[in-house]
Length: 273
Image (cartoon, rainbow, N blue to C red):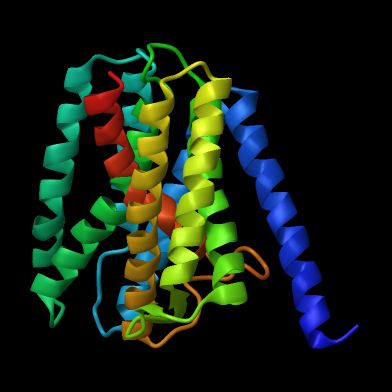
């Protein structure tokens, strides 16, 4: 087996393992779902801070990780009804401590360090916290809504890639991602909306609302992919990490989810309260 064939096998096996972990965690219980969100959020934050260090910035490391874990845990506890909404108020003073800590670090780029430390929380942690509220949006934990959302992201990724490889000619955003094409974008959009409508039908939801959800996921998810590529290109690295053989790191695999979650949360609030 050549190197290309070996890479395909490794990628397929790693992808299958990821599928089992995600589906199993979401279905097993609300607590395993929360653990999954924490792992994705904290893992992505760790990689975000690592990428920043490749860009000659020295962000804080352990304090953002601790705060990020507490934010996701608090969001889950509030969404599940274990804590009152006012418990989320603790998030703001915790974040306000970041510039205070920087006072004592004596680094050369304090402004950039604070910005990246807080930016990492916004980029990686807040979306996973919002995922907890999406999961409990009907008052009870609903794994089917979460999986429908995640699968819509993955359907877009898969069919955008396949369409782009087959007929892609016009570059979508060549400066950041030379391989992406407009043909791939519309191919992913078509199949993602189709899957979202099917999911809405299966779940007994409004098909128009679910079709709109598919469009929101695709547009925001594509920007999520481009944003992550921008970060890596600026830092001069290929992958955000190496946690998943053949897939890179957390950010490589969940970049679309990270940027789309705030948009999906708002979409549900407005159109499917």
